[in-house]
Amino acid sequence: MTKISACIISFNEERKIEACLQSLVPVADEIVIVDSLSTDRTLEIARQYTERIFKQTFLGHIEQKNLAVSKASHDWILSLDCDERLSGELTESLLQVKQRIDQYDAYSMPRRTFYIYRWLNYCWYPDRKIRLFNRNTARWGGTNPHDRVETDGTHIKRLSGDILHYSFDSISDHLKTIDKFTEIGADELIKKNKRVGVLTPISHATWHLIKLYIIKRGFLDGFAGLVVSVLSYMHVFTKYAKARIKIRQAHDSR
Image (cartoon, rainbow, N blue to C red; front, side, top):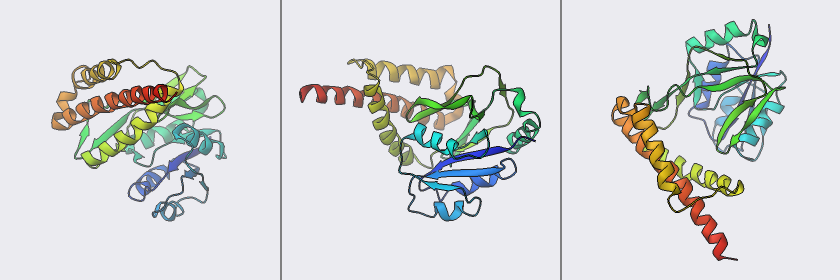
């Protein structure tokens, strides 16, 4: 049976990391954690599940996750975030896959998000992601902080069962993440020389709102769906607005 390394990056996740690690125990043959110098009980909890813990000042989401992959003992990698865990159905799917894992290049699985007080069944679902892959033919890529697994292969198997994502505990929590992620996102736009016009923030944000609330039927997620759609609009608007202002400031300082 093929062995799987579960790879996780962490930083001050004492409230959520144990449930994540518990869900990995039936599936993973080892657990690798790269921690960004946590100051809470994250490492104390993690040591109950693995000795393969590495400390690294945060390099960026993509860089940190690729570092974790490089520390793994096995080529097949299962990756989760600390606020995620495997559902029972997904665990069964993964155990079945281990018997014949090399039949496919990578495996994708849907992610269901618990937002403050309820599950989102439309806004951010199915949000299918590749999370099981062979590190010889796949790697973490994308644009920080929105990383994704990029694979050279074309045969990707869709697994049944959800990754359970326990995202934000409050609107305040969501707003803090928006501020942090839009700062990173704005810098990435500038790094890639993306053109950001006066109307870019509102045009991109409006399309995102329409996509979530109407096309993906976020209105069926009730008030939570409305909140997620509006704050997602804010996220996109803020990212491009920050980039626009940073570009202007750099130009004016010359």
